[in-house]
Image 1 (tube, one colour):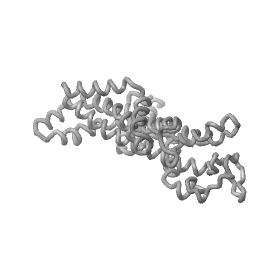
Image 2 (cartoon, helix red, strand yellow):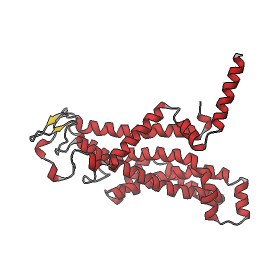
Image 3 (cartoon, helix red, strand yellow):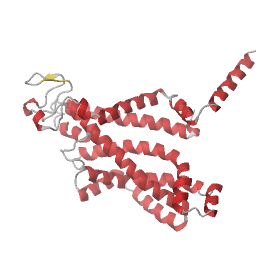
Image 4 (cartoon, one colour):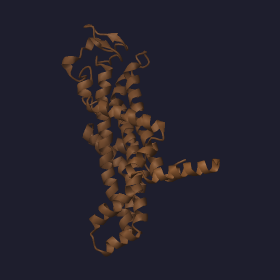
Length: 308
């Protein structure tokens, strides 16, 4: 009787899995990890804060009319001369740390997402071409990729920013030039396998045209690993931009990110005024960790071999 119950329970579970739609199955698999759910909720909150920072921030930290230099470096919970309480303190210029972090999230997320999408578009196209055509084209492209992968990512970004100068657009260009190779290598490895299958051979026989074969037939089967790589590279782009801004060669002072906020308070750390760097650092860590938690669960879902 016990064995019959176990068999029936197993059959019911298999039936429920088979009756699910792909979307509901994906959601069910994603919800198996509590850490992934926590990461997703945290990421939604972070994106909400970044999008609506001008409406929910106590002040505009970069409007000189709202800043008083006499309120500079107030500790957490300190009050200004007009009685305003700064729960996370102020920086050396008297800016509210909560507002500065909210605005810094806008820049950091914007740069990370935009550079990730641009690098994805370039790497995707190059990887599809290399995997589909093979031969000399593949060899030339992959030698370029291997050559760039031989250098640290931050070194390439440093060299480009030294040439281009500071600015949001310059940082995005440097990040795209540093990251596209990871997408190209990932897509190329998948495209090499898919291009040998029957549906690609049938498309070639029908003379559908190279762009249609690449982007309508080959691309959809290369997307699963790209989703994971894209998510991870957004987190890497945010961390790399923060590092560049901390070193003083990334974003200008007029367009501060979390990395620049950390840099602004670094010189005050030894004097005990930790909050100027500490709270932006926590926000940066929280953002990157949330993205990586979601990416880890996506990797397990899209690669069944990793599932326990």
